[in-house]
Structures are given as structure tokens and as C-alpha cells.
Length: 226
Image (tube, rainbow, N blue to C red):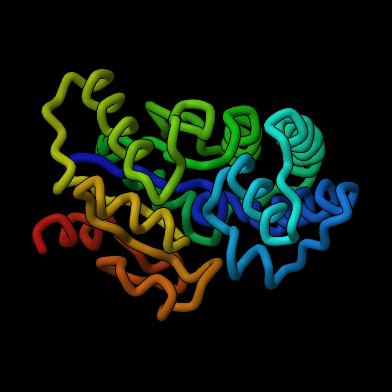
């Protein structure tokens, strides 16, 4: 195993409910109803820009780029406050990341979230020091399911470590179909957790688990040999 690259929301941080709350509050001001079923059924895995754009279009509203920028800024302020106060890690992820760090496995984040949100959350739950690189929505021109983010994260790890890290020997941890598709297109193996979707919705992953509590470094290494 050359490296681990992980999604963040719903994989490292139990933050998807907070994102839902933020999207719903901001969209309500624009006359758009945004439910739990909407978010988890259609929009989870999209970055803020694409989520607001799609939610508007699905309600018959074409938000301007200026409006979307304002909405993103409003949601970001809400998220930063909520995350600092109440964010918790996904069960089992902190020990898993710690074990990989001890084994000197390079690790990075690839997420559709914003950098400030990731920094706040990662520090709050005590895992920021494990990540050599963080690729966020601000760093790519196309979000998941495009593989650009995962490819960029791997490139950054190569540059930082000076090692010839190979995509096929990298494991991605994900929770959403769009992220799984992005990682597979980047040529990486995928461990998916059912924190946001049932197993049948994330069946394209190489391994599906209900919790990280029983996942070991050996399990991840085995994926790269499959």
C-alpha cells in the first residue's frame, strides 16, 4: 500500500447532518425546500457550488453565479460555527488513521468541502497532523465524480514524500457513489463505509464496511493486492 486518500465528510468527520442543516437553511431563504431525502438521495457528494446549482434547477430556479457565491459564503459561516461547537469523528476512524501514521503510510484528504471547514474539523477531532495534503473544492475545476481531485491529491503526496506512489497501490476511503466513481476513475482501490448510503448504493467499492472499528492496516494492504 503506497498511500491512503480519504474523503472527509461522512468518512472522517460526522458532518453530513451539519451540511444538510446548512444547505436547508440557506436554500429556504431562496424559496427552495431542501429535505433529508433530497440531500441523501440526490446531492450528497457534490461540492457546495454544484449542490446549490442542482437544487435550484430541480426546483425550477437558475441561480446566478453571484447568487451561488453568496449562498456558499452564508453556508460557510454557519458551518464553521456548528463544526467548532459540535463536530465528532466517524466511529473508528481516529484509531485507523493513527495506525497508518505509525506505519508511515502517507495520507491525504480529497473532499468537495471547503478548506476552512476541513481545517476546523480535522483539528477539532485531532487528526490534522496525519494529512500531508488536503485537496478541497477550491483546488479543482471539476468536482466528484470527476477524478481530478484524487489525481491531484496523489500528485501532491508524490511531491511531498519524493516517492513514486502508484494509483493502483493507493486506497481511498469514501461514503458516496460520486466519490467512489472518482476514485475508481483515478485508478485507485476503494473502501466504502455505509455511514451515508446503504451497501447496494455503494457496491462499486472494492470493500464495504459498516464501521471502521474492525478495519486494519492489513485489510487496506490486501485491497492493493487484489
